[in-house]
Each structure stands twice: as structure tokens, then as C-alpha cells.
Image 1: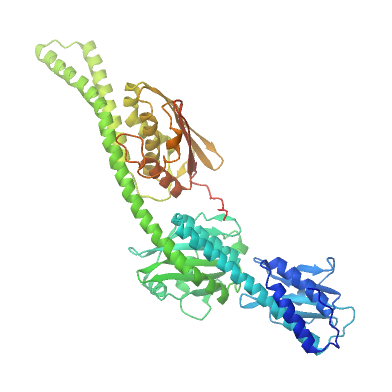
Image 2: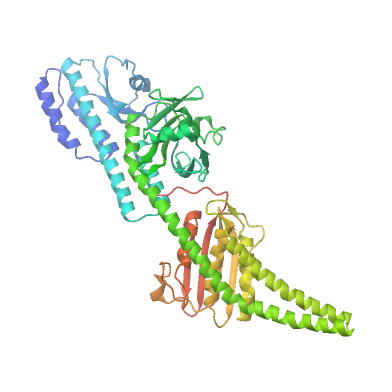
Length: 567
């Protein structure tokens, strides 16, 4: 619509009708910046102002700044808007009028109008306030639509059975897009025995990535446990290095437990947490965890953000329940796969052990006969003992590798040694591969950086890929294992010259229970994918029927910080 300027003599009913008409135009806009630009143009037309602007305080900024202005090169004093947001008199010049724009249950910014001549009557002033109120409602409506979009997207991800840890970051990213926190958001899971909170996901705003602290465990006492069981959302501001709860409740112990970033940021005082929202996930099943949002400046989070966080608690609870079910299922699958692998290994190495021990027994018997008959020849004895030692070393190497694999370790993030994992795997498989005329080509430097994960998981990963390669070469061939640093990752390649994978099977090889092996269970690649998901790694398979298969694995180093996930 095209609005005509209203002079001071226009009657107030005419102004109200005009404002009512533009409301329907603004209601069709779904982007904040576009809405503000449109409002600015309409304000200039309706009130006959010579210059107009919109100012607001962006996330992470101490002072408001001019977002848009007409004409484009006009100068405005930001102090006017600073006073407005601080609740002080804006005190503009006589030819300037400032009206507040509300957003997130507080004054967010303001719209400024300026004339060459200061001749505003009371009716026009009321009209400008009314116009600012319309703009406020428009911005709040866009925020509500954005909230609905975010929650709908997360609901869809839940229905798609997105992996729980990926869902955690969907939730944190959604909170970021809605609250514009400038420090971090995190999800901590409550461990019932002993009482503790484990950090399972954290997004750091200024790093634009995940936190180095994921996996951190914070002990909690009965007092903190009681606070979480209340289900209340707590808000805190840091004042003189003390956490003060917004409603004066004695809950600072909870804030201190969640203030684990302070040491990491001590050299960046501007990046220290100074405002916290803590929302416990108290359900009928007990306290599942805590959802936390943090900002770098006191007072930048409020009741609006607390309501937003409350709205995501149900999603977080679903994600945590899914995580626990998934971890339980994966632990069972991993145990089943290990038993299956051990059974196959026992069958596979039994021939090697029998050969090794079979050569030892007659030598020992012959040595006993020579000793009884006094026919001991030192040179023959030395050769016989060398053969016995070689056979026993084979047995020791095979059994040692099997014991190392069977021992495993707890799941979780830590540091693992890839060369040692390859050595353990080959100690089990090497004799059998040589017997089946499989040549082993190894290029794994000893000085590779430690990778993220546990040694047991890494050995399971290498063993699964290596046994798949071995089984694909029943008539002999070549197995190549190579590794090298690649940025913040370690690249591992396991390549064989076996039968390859048929095109009709290639799309299904990572499905649970699908296998082309006669005695397989179809868990192997699913377990590998699960382990790599937990480590933040990935793998890619390339295969050509009749020519072989290459598996390329990316393993994050133990010191790597994950890049942010694009949503």
C-alpha cells in the first residue's frame, strides 16, 4: 500500500485507521530484517519524517547500534538509544522522536524519526507509539513462527530416529537461533550412582564449534540433587565473582557446578560466563539431566529465554532416553560381535596353534631321548631350541592379541594408539594370512598422533575391517594397511585385492543383519559405523567386483576440536 503523510492537523481516527491498514501488510512478512526495513519506509511515509532509523542491541554487543536508516547516509547519536534501553530518558533533540520496540519481553530497540522542523502534536506522538507497538508485535510474531519452525524440525528429526548425540546438537543449535546466546549452550546427563552430571554436548558460540569439555563429569551433592528435582528453571547473573539467582533463591551451588568454563576462559575475561539459565530435566523417571544456556554479560538472558528453554525440555528428555536405549543396544551388539569375532578367530588360528605346538612336541620328545642316551649334540640342541622358541612366539603373539581384543575397555572419549591397534590385529591374523598366501603391506608410522577413543574400540574397528579384507581373498592376494596424519585427523586405509562387492549388495553392506558371508551375522560394519559416530569419525568404502575393496577411515586426533555442525 502507499501511505500518505499525516500532518499535525490530521485527526487521530484517520491515523488509527491507517495504522490498522498497514498491520495486515506487515503480517505477511516472515523475516525480521525485511520487516524492519518495511516498517522504516512506512514510518517515513506515514509521519512525514525527513529521516528515520531503527536501532537495537545485537547479540554479544554492549551497546545498541543503528541497524537500518533512511536516507542511507544520515547520522544518528547511538547514546539516545542506549538511554532508551537502559530505562533512562532518551532525551532526544527537539526535532527528533524515539519510540521503543519490545522483543523477548523487554525493550529491544527503538525507532527514531527526525524532521527539519520540530512540530509534533500529541496525536502524532501517540500515533508513533502505536506504530512502534505494531512493529513490536510483528517482530514477536516472527519470533513465534521461528520457534515453531525449530521445534517442528526437531520433532521431525526425532521421528526420523536421528542419532541421539546429533539430536542434542540440533536442540542446542535451535536454542542458538532463537535466544542468540553469545557464550554457550550445553546438555548434561545425570548419572544416578554416583551422583554426577556428565557433559554430553556443548556448543560454543564464539568458537562456532563444539566444546573441548565434552565428556567432563561434575560431581553433585544432595543439595544440588534436591534443586534439580524441583524442576524449576534457575537464572543467575555473576556479580563481583558471585552467582546471584534472579529470584533470590539459594541455588548458587548449581551455578558453580555448571561454571566449568571459567578456567578455560581465564585468559579471555570477555568470554567468561556471566549469565546462566539452568533447566533441570525432572521427569517421572527422575532427573535425566540439565539444559544450560550461558551469556557473556549479566542481564542478557531473562524470562523470555527461560520460557524458550522450558519449551525444549521435552525434546531433550526424549533425546536422553534415546541415548540410553541406543547405548544399551549398542553395548549388547558390540558384546555379541566380539563373541562372534572371537569364535571365528579361534577357528581361524587353531590351525596355526596346532602347527606350532605340533612341531614343538616331537622336538621335546627327541631332546628327552638324546638326554637319556647321552647323545646330546650342542649344535643340534641349539637349532632345536630356536625352532621351539619360534613356535612358542607364534602362540604367544596370537594369544596375546586375542586377550588384548577380549579385554577391551569402557566406551567413551579418550586417547588410543593406532599403530598398536594394527599390531594387535596382525598378531592374531598374520600367520593365517601367510598360510593362505596373503601378502601384508604395512605403512603405519609409529609416531602417528593419538586418536580420539579407547584402545579397545580402535582395535575392534581395525580387526573388523582387516578380517573383512582377509575373508574376501580366499585364494590369496595382498592386504595393504596405511595410515598418515591429515589435518586434525589420522587417515587410515585398508585395501585388499579380493573379490570385491557386487553392485546389488553395495547399498546394503552397512545394514544390520545383512551379510554375504556364510557364517556372518551382519553386525561388523554396523559396529564400525557406531564406533566412528561416537568418535566423530567416518569411513568410506570403494569396491570393484573382481579387483578388490578399499576402506578409507577418518579418525579425529585426541586434541582435535569438532567443527560446528551445519543445520
